[in-house]
Amino acid sequence: MGKVYLVGAGPGDPGLMTIKGHGLLACADVVIYDALVSPEILQMINPKAEKINAGKRMGRHSLLQEDTTQLLIQKAQIHHIVVRLKGGDPFIFGRGGEEMIELMAANIPVEIVPGITSGIAAPAYAYIPLTHRLYSSSVTFVTGHEAAGKYKPAVKWTALAQGSETIIIYMGIHNLPYIIEQLNLGGLSLQTPIALIRWGTTPQQEQLIGELGNILDKIAASNFSAPAIAIIGNVVHIHQLLSHKT
Image (cartoon, rainbow, N blue to C red; front, top):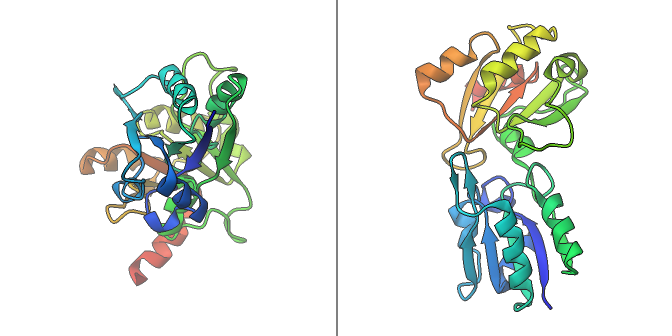
């Protein structure tokens, strides 16, 4: 019986991969990886290892989630080191918790190796601190794309509008019109700053800065598309203060 390691690959920059995660990739027998793992990190994998793409992107699934979990169980029964490599952190909107529960139910040993989530790293690379004494003392991480069959109803965006000074939205580009409408209904001004960041921490990183009231027009004009995260709140002003100096 082998062991499954749920490893966070970080946000994209290979320098942000943890030393422990790097070591596991170098000696893995099998690596089952997600779509958002960068090519540079995939190059760290043991050249003799079996590599399996289990990536999920909107409209294109290499493997269903249930198939991925069963594959992990099967591989752990015949290999010593099985790495489940996930973009960012396994436990931040990465379904790592679901996979861990299923693996442990099958009596497969599991170890978690955290990674740096894009919701922290991408804003940092764009000079946006998520907290700042003059701008924000609270941060909320939320998904903008909810799966069917959830344990409770949808995110209460109107409550979030007044519940947090900085809101980080994962996978929310496609639902942004609805999200902005709900935040505004909850009392958040359409003049509230918003930053959209895609391909965070990589050489291809792009950001689109605006306000809730004009960001949709800016998206349409620039053909900005997913995958990206959104940062909503006054901390976005700091990017505007610093960007001209970089």
